[in-house]
Amino acid sequence: MHTPTTWRLKTKPASLEQEVRARYIKAMLDDGFIGTGWPLNSSPRDLDDCLNLLAEKYPRKDATAVRFVRDTAIGDLVWIADTARGCFHLCRICSEYYYLKTAEPYGGEAAHRFDVDWLARDLSPEHVPGGVKNALRIGTTYCRIHCHATCRYSERLAGLEVESATSNDFLELLDDQALEDLVGLYLQMELKGALIPSTCKSDTAAYEYVVKSWDGKRSAIAQVKSGKQPITNSLASDDRERYLFAVSGIYPVELHGAIKIEKCSLIDFADSFKDLLPKTVTCWMSTAVSKVVT
Image 1 (cartoon, rainbow, N blue to C red):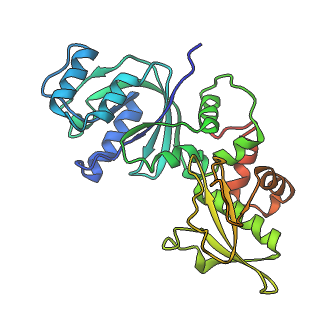
Image 2: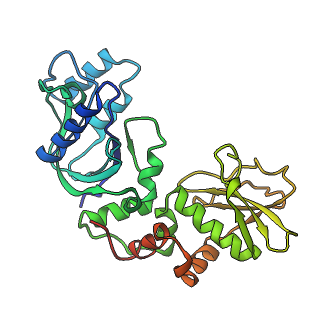
């Protein structure tokens, strides 16, 4: 049986006005196809001809189109980031690749196409696994999703039989914000203190926040990484207590006194204090094992 590859496609062509973008997305949803740009000067005869034409017209910029045209297969799953409306859709590829440049204003931006079956539509961000949202950091229009838990969740959503979920899937399914919330609550309990809201700033990129104990004697900073991101040694010179957590399990060889939070500790904490956790965390605790949101 074909094991599907899971992909992420952005659908916000910069060349289109907002109204035309909306029509572009609506056409894909209504007519059952997905498409991307890089239009050609003439319609290709077949896949090989298409790849040659792409290489000729876009010698330095054809990587995304080639990935879409050559590497996508029937049965693959594709998450659509509908950035115009702030939601997501999931589909399954059900045809071979074809080229169709229509007279519609979005025609050139949807010339490379596959027919699809829509499996889930209009999912709000909190119902989309972290692996999909993490893939949005990659600037390219079309990319493969490598997060195992996200792929497994997508396959469940497609009605496929998959291997049993593990407790680690729960942590992998969390996006950046939900994971930081979970670690922040854990540290407040661990240090018997409070998280300082003003320290959760984008300009403190080396760490996520500061937690202080109620008696004021302890001050800790936390570095939290979701997806495949590694922990770095950027906090090594800080003299405060340092707590580190990476879903990837990738840490520096030398921690310089920092405390690594174990996955089992976070999972046990979540199991013990479910009523304390935000919905963005608890919804994935059950979803990882059994349920999917449609």
